[in-house]
Image 1 (cartoon, rainbow, N blue to C red):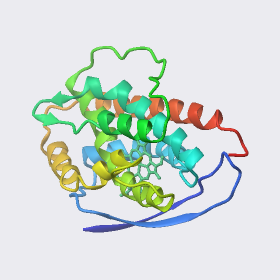
Image 2: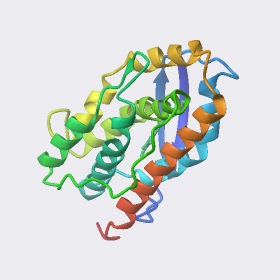
Image 3: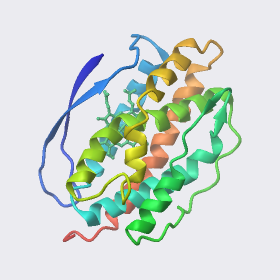
Length: 211
Ligand code: HEM
């Protein structure tokens, strides 16, 4: 078990300086020099930019975050539903229900379709989807602070936060993968993060500054 202390400076949209310190418990194997390490290092800048955008401290902000997450998952999940024995736990149904709870129209993002991708590229994308559950534990606590639950408005975060054994299992899959083109996996993870950033940035930039 590992303890990570992460510090954010979110709320860039509302120009409120708010530093959050969170202690995150993580159970997966951490092999230095591993594929996971390479994926993590090559995407950390975009992840940090996403953290800075992901303010969910008010319901108005949360709704934007929710719509962006729906758009992102709706765009990406169909390409990696099952990859060589690994099946994702789709978030789209819970996200859709959360949007309905909060009376937000489930509108898909207008993005070009991804082309058919290699197994290595799919692994890179899977890393991004599965890893996002680590941050979801923190985000779920924040959502609960504004009155949402795993039965209303934050179903998808509840689902991710309770999926405890998925990440260690996915780490095993990465550790055991022998026929992966590392560069292709990294490029795909970066591309997936870039799509996420574009979607979240649009959602938050559209938010009225007074919300
Ligand atoms: C928007 C607010 C977000 C916050 C506050 C957040 C926060 C976090 C935190 C605390 C971790 C755990 C870090 C660790 O254990 O060392 C994490 C991991 C991760 N998050 Fe996020 N995250 C956010 C959004 C996202 C999004 C939208 C994605 C996907 C597009 C994402 C992908 C990942 C990945 C792949 C990891 C695993 C990194 C690793 O290999 O350790 N996160 N996030």
